[in-house]
Image (cartoon, rainbow, N blue to C red; front, side, top):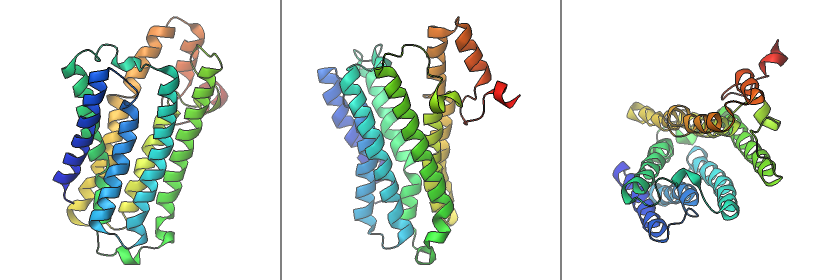
Length: 258
């Protein structure tokens, strides 16, 4: 399965669900399609490349575990909140709404580059043992746990009636701990790839770099920070929280460090 096939498969799946979402003007399928695309591409790559070694099989497990957790959480959430307000100004425009789905399809394909490269790598894959993969597993597991815990904490806060900004649990140490966990997950997969990469395959590390830059500078943190500023920008408690709390990497609040 070459790179063109990876991108075409991602685009095809997102185009199919986009048409459904556009016709019925629903937000229910958007996030679940994101996770589903990762699973589908991983399975297609596995079937196509028929990997035989631990380091090649591990990415399938890592991606599916992450996608099932995230997709399940996001699907459960949208079933309860009904509407994703990110699309309030997009839902009635085919071009605006479609551009989001197009970006989603391309994002998945790019982020999956290390998985594609790992499964295609033959070279020294047979000599890679669990010991070699420990750093990758530690980073991945830390990311998965941080993302899952922070999502669960924020969801419990919301359903319990919380209407202000989240500043407890992991959110006490980072304003976006879920995104930090997300980045660790993909860098963990990238680290697994470093045990087998050679030549141009090293360029596939653009995958975790892309999701990192996307979340920090484009579609993740900037949008949520602007939204939070609109809601609570005049609240002294929020100003103190924003001033004293790390934007991404969990750290002790500034007062505690002082």
